[in-house]
Structure formats: structure tokens, C-alpha cells
Image (tube, rainbow, N blue to C red):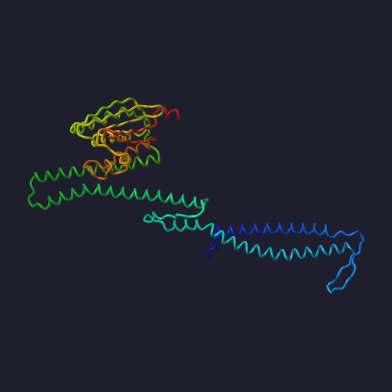
Length: 388
């Protein structure tokens, strides 16, 4: 047999009952003291005096005043104790029962929290306690629980969207590969030209899948190091990384007539060189790809007090502020999901994750004339050295 639960409701009931017993004992003691004092003030006789009294049969007799005082006091105390004990027992029983009921009502919000927690699953995170009543500690607890459920619901929803988008992005190149192979196999006499064309399409599709998998791995690695700390910790100058990224993307920029201007000053930081290089490359790549033909990109770096910063500005279409904030979400391109032919929409997501892993931040703002400016701020080397 399982032992009965010593619940909070039962403990509160016992607490209420114990308080009633204590208060009752104090009241009985005070009543006895007040009774004695009242009798002393009323029963005042001279020493050796004789007073008349009546027995239980109604007969009159004379007794000594001192004996009369003792008899009256004892009878009064006995009556007080017997009557008070009866009333005391009734009050304790009624008070304990009332305390049990009141404790149940007071703990009702806790029961609602428990019932909601038992009912929750990944599919029912939209449920809320929505407790009504006075704005007390229990309502604050229920509201805090509702806020936690809202955050969990948003996190799971974001995760579901991320998985769905990743699956879609991976399914597209696989579908292209399967289609090309099926077409080639359906042709009984494929020519070398057809096979070469198919091989080129398959190669492009595998490259796209490879870029997506690599981006997902970098994003996962950055988010993991944001929580657990950097695995590699070296001195890196952002000013050195910018020319590398510009050279690597010079062909793509030239093909669209996009001019890239880099004005860099030393911006040393401590961190993972590969992640920081990916951060710079993503920003420059995004600025070139999400640009207008014949536009321009400006990349600058520097230090300001305890902060090293990197800024990338590019021309382009006019963007709304709310659209710009969505750009850091995974699989978002220019404020819309999966609309670009190139890239997976993870560039700025990786930038923000890498910046956060290095103790910094990445922000973006739309430019009035069109285009975007992304600003990354990281702790500078001298700031970290002074802290250590």
C-alpha cells in the first residue's frame, strides 16, 4: 500500500488547526485569570465573617467567608473549564474544516497549473491557464507559467518551420537529380551531349545541397558555441579578413557590375578564425547578391573604445524596418521565404549566431535611398585583455 500523501492542503489545514488550538488555550487561560480577578473584586468579606448560603436542597446555612470564596471560585473555574472546553472543541473542529475548504480554494490556481502541465505536449503548447482573480502571488505564478508556455510554443514553432524549410531546401536539389537521372534512364540511346548536360545539372544540384548542409553545420556550430563557449580562441583582425572575402567574390561582383569599396582600420578581436571569416564572407556575399546591377558595396572596420566593429552597406531596393528584422531569421531572403535562386537564406542567421558566440551583436537597418546596412560589434582585444 502506498503511503498517504502529506499534501500542502493538509499541511495548511493542520497549521490552521494548530493556530486555533494555541489561540483557544490562550483565551481559556486569560478567561481564568480575568475570572479570578473579577471574583476577588466582588467577593470581599471581612476576616472571620460568616455569610449565609443555600445548599442544593434549598436549605439556608451559614459558612465561613473564606470557605465561601474558595467554593465559589472553584465552581466558577469548573464551569469555565467545562463550558470553555466544549466550545473550544467545536471551534477547533469547525475552524479546521473551514481551513481545509479555504486552503483548497486558495490552492485552486496551483491545481490549474498542475492540470495544464499534465495536459501539455508539443502539440498543445498553445494552452494557457489564463487565471482570473486578484493580482496576488498565485496569479503572478500562473501568468509566469503562461509566459513560459508562450516562449516554448514560439521556440517549437520556430523549430518546426526550420525543419520544414531545411527539408524543402534539401528536397529541391534531390528532386532535380532524380528527375535528370530518370530522364536519362528513360532514353534508350542517350547521346554524349545529353549525358554531359545531365551531369552538369546534377553537379549544380549537388553543389547547392552541399552549400546548404555546410551552412546548416556552421549555424549549428555557432549556436552551440554561443551556449557552451568558443572551442578555438585566437587573435583575429577583422581588417585582414575583409580583403580575402572581397577577392573571393570579385568574379561574382564583376559579373553584375557591383563595385566593392573596402576602407578598413585595424579591428582585433579574440575568437574562432574560421567562424569570423565566415561572418565576413557572408556579409560581403549578401551585399553583392542582394544588390542591383551596377550598384556598390562599402565595407568598413574599426574600433571604438572597447568595441571592434564591422559595417557593410549595399545599394538595393527600399526595405521596411519590419522586413529588415526578419532577415536574421533562418531561410529568409529579402524578407520573403525561399524566393532566391541562389543561397539558402541562412547568411544573416549565421552572422548573428557567430556574433553572439563571440559576445557581440549584429544589427541591420534599411537605408533611405534603398539597400541595407549591417553592423557587427564585437569585444575588442584590449577590452578582453583588461578584463582578464
